[in-house]
Image (tube, rainbow, N blue to C red; front, side, top):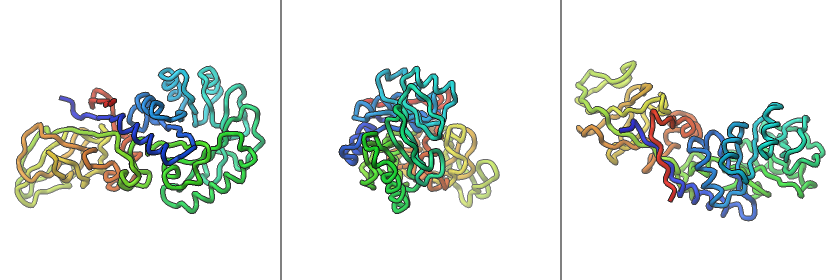
Length: 339
């Protein structure tokens, strides 16, 4: 038996793509599959996204781009991260498109000139005259998931700078803007988190018609009863006040179930149960209402247990939760549903 099992539902991903396309209207959807498809598997996610109507794929590193290129020889692939001279040469050979963030302009491959409209990261502050290789103009929104007013200021700034170049593809929208800020959609939107059925607003994804793609399940590997005064785990963070059944799940922070997840909720045999004690490298404990048999199913994500809820406990975002899950086959079994 595997310690845990990750299930990737590509049917749900395709439905998310169609939901985003419905919101975008005439704008294209460019699927962001960086970070191994946010931990979901870049090649599988890319295939499902293209099948469902995405027009391009977005990655960050040259290694990510080449992996996707090998799987999809004809796909439009935008590599968004900074590259050295060797990386640019590889990109040229592979037929990639690159993001241009400074004054050094490589030749012989399609470029997207990035303008910094308020993110304060990569990009030029003022738009220079696009060269013949520039096919797109882009920017990146800092607050579309929270402060829509600032996002709209960025969009207005971008429109002012790029309006005279409407023959080029203009793109600034991310998932949050694509869903809720209509004026951001322009010619294309680079959508990542929403593809995976995760909320860019840290709320219930169903509010925006999204379905989570990833589920994560394990089982009770050991069950024992603590007597009053007995504890479980490092640091004795949980000490029983009365006779208490606990179950040990063979997943820990080496698998991506973070040490800070003490107090979060998982499903044990379909019932919500609290994680107690310190999460170890290879296991964590849950408090049980009664003795349950070894092998009882435990759902870490899925069946109503959302990555957003774990993120709230951690004081982080759902992106970090899913990209941190270890999919090494030596620690987890990965199942892809392609219905």
